[in-house]
Image (cartoon, rainbow, N blue to C red; front, side, top):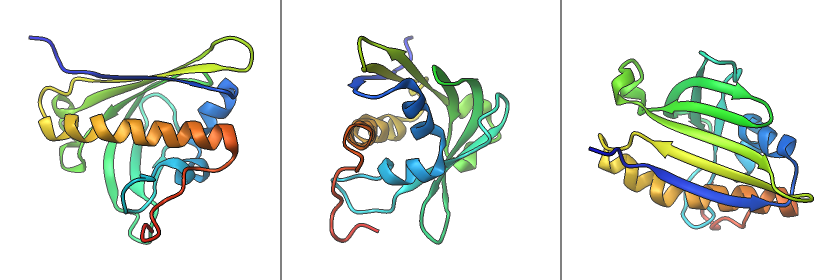
Amino acid sequence: MTKPSFVYVTYIATTPEKVWRALVDTNVTREYWASPIEDGPAHVNVSDWKPGSRWEHQRADDTRAVVIVGKVVESIPPRRLVLTWAWPKEAEDDSKHSRVTFDIEPHGDGLIRLTVTHEDLERDPKMLAGISSGWPKVLSNLKTLLETGRALPRSPSAT
């Protein structure tokens, strides 16, 4: 049986270093890791980004609620970041984790190709559905931020 995966490729007029920073710097993730289409708080990614370290995807509001957790599997700045990905209640059960890989590759003059691969999603159809609509929004927002200096406009009621 094959395991469902989600793959998203985008080309961004920037440098590998700026994409890397956008993935790991909480001040930058706060800018783009929110849906420009739906209401809701922004999010931040928190870790020291060393292999074996825990990382958390937290709401960037006063609650700082942890939405997703995992471990850093591989961290090769500014080329590759691999994370496990799980609901907080499943953090201790590695068999429940999916895996996200960010590959950052130069692609011509002033362009990079960012490939995000989210694997091992067969166990949780809700997760697959969520990331299938979520990743395109987040990555479009990331691209816009890096190319224009500002994220896509958010709904007026979004916090």
